[in-house]
Image (tube, rainbow, N blue to C red; front, side, top):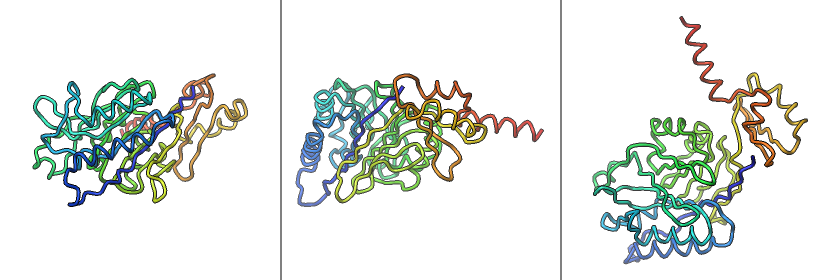
Length: 303
């Protein structure tokens, strides 16, 4: 069944300058002001940049989930007021260790979990931060959310973990864009990818890596409405069935075929059926099942 989610990616636009004496206070106020401007839009998920953590907090400013400090409370207050999930950047303390983290706040204003940056930069480790251990996904009322932070984007092992966990939305809080690697993560995870950055070009891309909305010189907040009820299939053995799907369901099902990739997204646009039910009805083979079958047949053939 169609599962629409309204997403916002926030541009962090407070430069770090020597003229700002109390950077923590300035970043906190900037974050509050930014969230206040997003009130009333009916958003389901807001993602904030890693710059909140890197510029707004020192090690001694790290917060805990059990005893939230000013940054986590800011996220909680907005989430509760707007009935919206927040993926917020923050330094977190757990078991005496300090992490560069994304904290996830649910639509009732409660922390429901956190992702700790697995692949810290060398200077972050030298500065006293501890790396996280694994990928993290959270099942929520708006879909399955996964997290990644900045330098993480460079590491295949973490991406493969998320491929197995199958998030609906990858949240990327960063001080680094990543270029085409964002699209690689989106495609391999079969997920929407939301990046929040301290410079232009952050935003929301679809599971094929196509831009749906990005921040630019006119747009400090990128917003997009996405439908999470989708399945991805390869064109092989499936494409001849697409015309039958379109004829039967017309606008109730979208078959989205981008150029040059060799695969398609099947979206259910109604509450009458899910995309998976459409795939099962027409005996469509999901892309990851097709790749697994191909690997197995190739291995058998080599023997």
